[in-house]
Length: 209
Ligand code: B1M
Image 1 (cartoon, protein in one colour):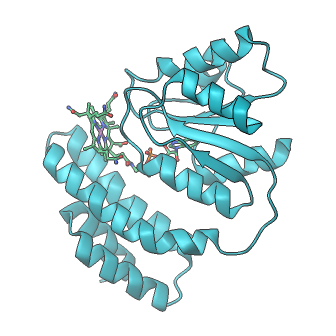
Image 2 (cartoon, rainbow, N blue to C red):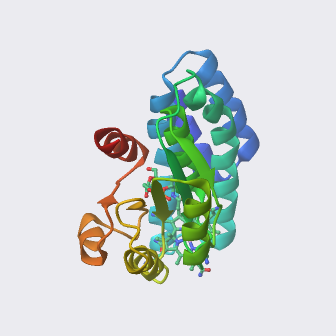
């Protein structure tokens, strides 16, 4: 069986040691890192997401899959970061208040860093105040927010509204992403941009800086 298919299967089975081992082999075989990510690791998480939605699996299995995904990400991360690109702009990123999903946010952060952006990662469960105060204190030009839950996406609007009420729109732009949100939602709340994934976020940032 194709090694990327095996990585995906082992994420689905939640076996972090196997994912680590197989990802190491895939890297040694010089399979492009983007392909390992898309066709192995992310493919596995997509299957897990579908099964969770259809109640075929439950939270403990999802947690094991997330752990397995992180085991692979640890190996892929340095490869995404290699290349010594000069710093282009400073971006504060985080998952919004009440939301603990951080796999996608971490991935986007690593990809942006690899593309030459300075990333200040506030982690998950980040309040609007913390996003804005950090961006002001660090002189960041962008705030990138992630939300995976329909119940937490309104926190993004709180950040956008607050930036507007403090007249900071020209200084701090807002990017949103994550499975719960869409381009339409970004337009509805007045966020500067919706980014589908890490590559999309890089393209957007490169186009505006
Ligand atoms: Co939960 N979860 N989860 N979960 N979880 C979802 C999101 C859900 C869609 C599953 C489902 O029902 N189908 C569902 C949300 C439904 C909804 O809101 N409508 C859900 C739920 C309900 C919950 C709980 C409420 C379950 C419960 O307790 N009953 C609970 C909430 C906890 C909380 O946050 N308060 C919960 C918990 C968890 C775990 C802790 C077990 C675990 C998270 C572990 C972790 O992150 N450390 C987890 C997981 C793993 C998932 C699924 C299965 C996978 C998410 C993931 O990591 N995907 C997810 C199902 C799904 O999304 N289909 C699900 C891989 C990741 C690389 O993709 O995060 O989408 P993603 O990131 C992508 C893009 O979205 C984008 O780029 C990334 C790379 O392509 N992106 C950005 C993300 N952020 C971006 C920011 C940007 C730009 C792009 O700019 C700044």
